[in-house]
Image 1 (spheres, rainbow, N blue to C red):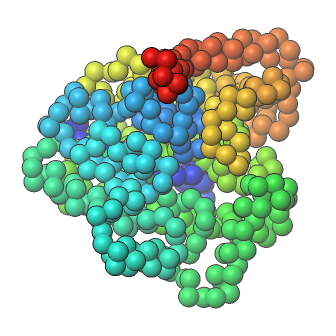
Image 2: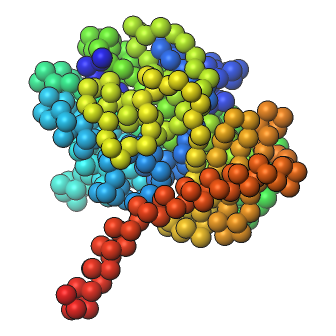
Image 3: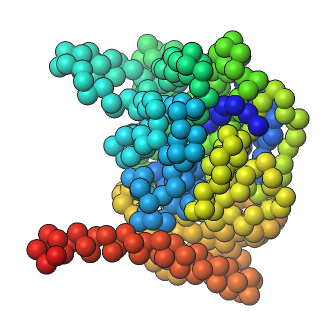
Length: 433
């Protein structure tokens, strides 16, 4: 269908802060992508954090399956491995990320011909490492910024073109993620102090030191968040212009999405703590190519559908373990299940902390394993999820409880071989086998 696929993921980008989703601030380059393709109005993350949501994006499996998230388990059907297995050297796979949770340390480099995570320059000598460290300290962002990623991406795309190979590239931008900053104005000391103060409130709220913040601080955080979106929009425009210049755009499907959103006190928090409300789950999703007819799809889809779509476009068979369907053949709304199983202060998976949500038609239900309590919201009347009607609609709550139990049983079934592997390892350590 298309020779190449570019998967653009943007950390912490909620859908309702983009102009294609009716936000008043224009994002011209993302708008152009949306105008030349398919915009999914109701796309959802399967988890509210980076380590967990990318299990869904790149393996089309739920985050808590196969022993949980964090490290990319070799038991999972990982998209880059599947592409290389199916297409071999005919495709050049490129991974360019700036979030440490997506680094080679967590196994994300597998299946990529080229992989950059900002952490893999181990061959540098001591002086080179010192210079790089000083540059890192002087940068306003703790993560490699989009211009750095684009420079690397262009070089690798050019290499693939020169070697006459197809391209799958995944590029992950962190420019919207906390801590927020104004890149071009940090020489202004007063502004730096103001930004530092605003950022400090996020940490205080996340770690439970505060449960409310002044309105002017909240407004400042939203301004900084939106400024990051405008910045990443420019980087995306620069990347698309390069594809056009290299005469690759017509043969390339560009997929733009996010791993999760961010909260601005809608449910008493900031950033993206382990909650499952829609400000954290409703994400942008765009499939773009100049040849595509512009249309908007309102049917519910989720991150599980991204890997099957990429595989179909590039001409390889859908993996049997994948739970999603290609976005190119969506015919009906799906039951969207999202989940998370860690606390705000730990990324360790703990099924006692398991939270699961389900969106089905007008209803959204939440389940918390520790208390076994269910929250139920009528999204038609209460899209902000403020009024829990579980006690009023007991039969509906009960039917959702059955689905939650089915999901948990299915997930635990994928842990069995992991538990067996650990048991064998323990027996070997004890000298019993």
